[in-house]
Amino acid sequence: MSNWLVNTITKVIDFFYPPFKRFIPLQTFRYIACGGGNTFLDIFIYFISYNFILQKEVVHFGSIAISPHIMAFILAFTISFPTGFFLMRTVVFHDSDLKGRVQLFRYILMVIVCILLNYIFIKLFVERFGIYPTVAKMLTTLIVVAFSYMAQRKFTFRKGEQS
Image (tube, rainbow, N blue to C red; front, side, top):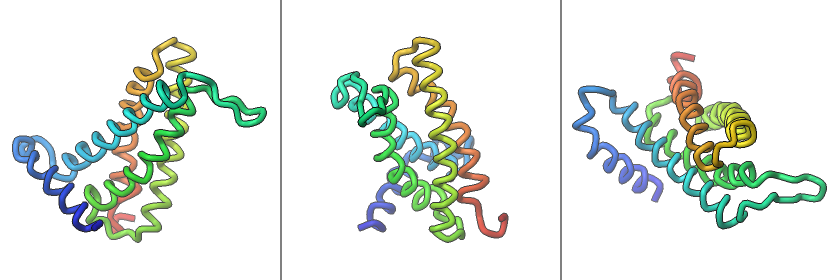
């Protein structure tokens, strides 16, 4: 099933590539498509979590209180992390000859950095600048995606001979 899914996703993305062929390489287009789809999924889950699951309420775990905008981020992350790794490894950077465990370890490192960036920017935008949480998440995503693209291309999924 995995091969069927990967092939289907790749064919759908590649179908839309020809108009962009003159401007960007296929791998970059696939990154934008996969990353964009996963980002949309992440923001959608964030919105649903914040507004309907958490109902904009603080979540308490014993003496720990987690604000709803941060808890919504955590919930969205639990879905978008494995989905993102799957898409990056199998559709976008399928030609990387690094072992899967090396890719996963590097991906986890990059994700930790991205989580910290997400946390910092969401807290900053919501609590310091008073921006609505979903809009803050979107702005944060733009910043983090730019960083993530370069990190994944140059570090996480680079080819082994470049290591």
